[in-house]
Image (cartoon, rainbow, N blue to C red; front, side, top):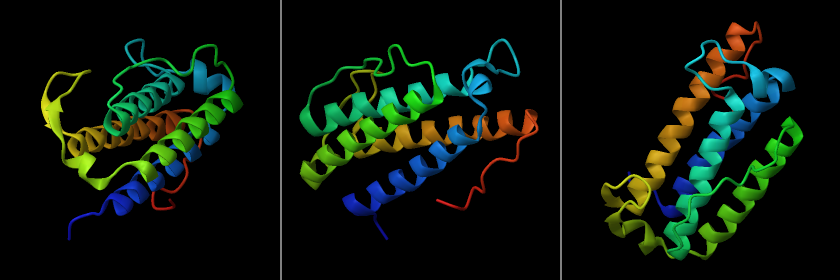
Length: 154
């Protein structure tokens, strides 16, 4: 079975709900300051990457406006982080609903990473990136002695 545009968006939504639940499980100081190794980033920085990528990709896919910018400038609290995530997702949802399904089939060079691919593949890559970083969040929580949210509850 092939996913429809709306079915794919529900996959994105379920994953984002779970990512936000991981954010909520972190103590605020650990969300922004904890890293188990100097070469690894705090989870808040990973969330910023996930959502900045979403913002850049959706504006490009839906509107053909390709700009990768930090939508989290000046954010330093869990509440602000979650609010910004919600604002970007609301904007994504609006663009998604207005975008014709055929936009997902467009193939072009990726303005951020270079490789030519379909918009669908580009958004799938963004989802895979989110899943990867969320897995790191699970690990961080366990290292902090915090039981993470159930993976299967979306």
